[in-house]
Each structure stands twice: as structure tokens, then as C-alpha cells.
Length: 186
Image (cartoon, rainbow, N blue to C red; front, side, top):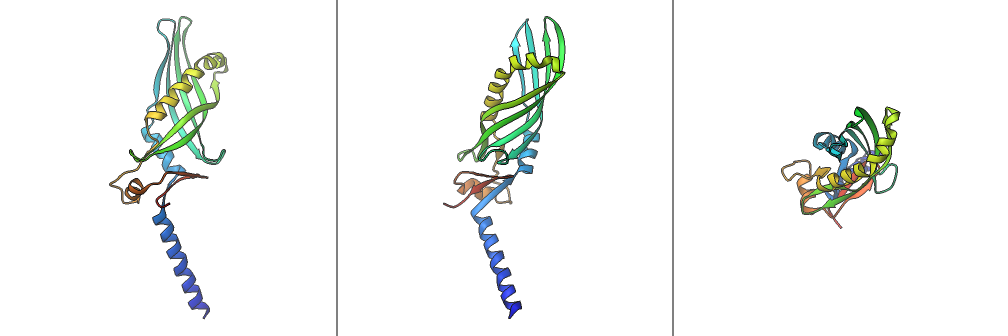
């Protein structure tokens, strides 16, 4: 009798798990990080020509989904800064921490990182801190514009992992610690 009960419980668990997979599609933090590494080509020139020019390249983006703040994604990364001014050329590395609100665009089947905001920035060498404070508003605006136009994740119709169903039947997104969930049913 115990074996029959155990077998029935196992089958019921399998059915429930299978139904859950049909009701939603999940994208893990690791998948988002891989997509960010592949698609990130943020490079921006900021400055006043002839007075001071800064070239900034963003790299090593890593996401933390819904861990620090509910419904938000925290991104960390490095920005390499090459600055040339009337005082000479300088290089620096900026450690950035940004918060963003993920948003789903049903028509494009894509997840965008909206309302991007730099919440912490440290620079090496330290003597470049005043330069960073001057550039930070421009960098903040540039990053926000960049991520508003380029999706962090695009659902593919040719995928066999359930992305095609998610693209067709998605009802929005939910942020859970460590993943983005796309519900397929109301």
C-alpha cells in the first residue's frame, strides 16, 4: 500500500511540475548575465571638443535579479575611462552599481532595463573622483538611453526551450529572486 501511495504522489508531483512549466517561462540570472556579456557594446564619448573629451566603455556586467530590492535588477560592472584634456591624457577604471526596473515589451517579445540609475560609483585612481562626479550625470543619462533602446533579453520564436510559447502568450513579467518569470496564463 505504501508503494502505491508513493507512486501516486510521485506522479502527482510530476504532473504539477509539468503544468507549472506550461504556465510560465523563466529566465535565470545566469542567462541574463550571458546575454548582457554578448550584447553589451556600450561605448560613449562625452565632453567638450577641444577642452575635455572622455571615452567610456562598459564591461563585465553582472545582474542580481530581485535580490537587493523587490522588482528591481541590480547591475554591477566596470567602465574604462580614457580622458584627454588640456591638462593631458588620463585613464581610469570606474566600478559601477546600477539599479533598473525591467519591463516587458510584448510586441517585440523583449525585456528592457528601464529607469537605469547609477547608485554607486568608485574610480581608480582616486584622484579622478572629481572628474567622475562631473561625468556621472552624463553617464547616467547615456546608460539610461542605451538600455531603453536595447533589450537585455529577446524571446526567440525558433527556440525549443519554450521561448516561442512565451513570446506568443506572455502576460508580462514577474521578478523573483534570481530569475525573471514570464507568466503564460492569467
